[in-house]
Image (cartoon, rainbow, N blue to C red; front, side):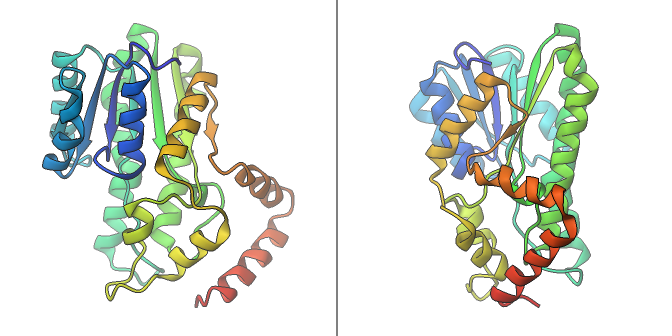
Length: 268
């Protein structure tokens, strides 16, 4: 997909990777970009400099009525959605003892919001014969996330759902990509994985130590290239493919290595 002339919705668009995607898509000639965020004022602030080509809306991506309203507003402003970027995410929770409400929030935002958006969009895309779904998952969704069970589990599920969409509808005009970075310099990494007292958690330490922490702008550039090539996996950190290959080749050896990483990071 070439971005020029497309109508795009980006959830979690007021900061981090989402904001970088919004700005890159607009620079690349998107007809209209809708910036969606739980923080409506922040979404409007991102859209404001692009008057006439961007719209900022507040929305809880887990609310069916709210998402439906976003899609209706997008169509009214710019036309039917061509590319939906399910980018909103939360980095919360630690282990199996994490409270149910935290597990529920991680699964609701990181997975079920993707299902909800697809439920609303896919029938129209199939009827039109084209549409593109970009899922922001994580390298944790292909590997695991030391120090955060809810994040790891929910991101695995996000990858699985994106893959299912591609397998099921790929021959009917639906294109799907899954963005799986490691560390990115965003509020999700800098604040989301922090303990309540402000200390970096095991998860944050592991992510920062695992490889280069990229800028959100760098990630947006890789996303544009991946969309152009219509690749399923978009990997801003190419080494993730190597790690995934090692995991598949010898799962027991890979788990043993991850246990050593957990111990080195001071995990339980």
